[in-house]
Amino acid sequence: MKKLLSAGAALLLLALPQTASAVCLLCSCTVSTTAVAFGTYDPLSASPHDSAGNVHVSCTTTLGLLVTLTISLDKGGYSSSFSPRKMASGANRLNYDLYTDAAHTIVWGDGSGGTQTVTDSLTLSLLGAVTWDHAVYGRIPASQTTVPPGSYADTVIVTLTYN
Image 1 (cartoon, rainbow, N blue to C red):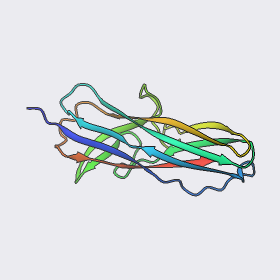
Image 2: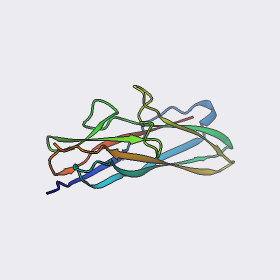
Image 3: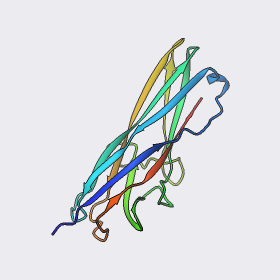
Image 4: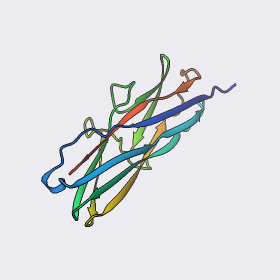
């Protein structure tokens, strides 16, 4: 009989207060997310279980200028490392990872320990607004056969820094 796990990871928005540089004194940016929802995971499968979410940034300004964005993710609420992160169901843990790329090769973190942040530049026109999106690629590794069934979740803090 197959064991099936219901697993979901939510990316929680937390735009930490940042001091804008002289270049960006009159601009404002906000960040929002779409959760990475893994659905049902089969621990007996030899294949990893993938899902994706999204980070959405919206910036406005009264002057035309270039804004540089950096998006970082924390380790989540149940892990002491970026890879693997851990989802929880009570005292039980299920390993997963978050990546910047669809090939699942670049772990998204804060730039430490071999992780990468996502950085981009946006050009804002006079009295303009611009939006930017980046997918968050999630993966639960295959064959986590000792994990009991349950609803697993984690909260990852997304930090937007801009100047």
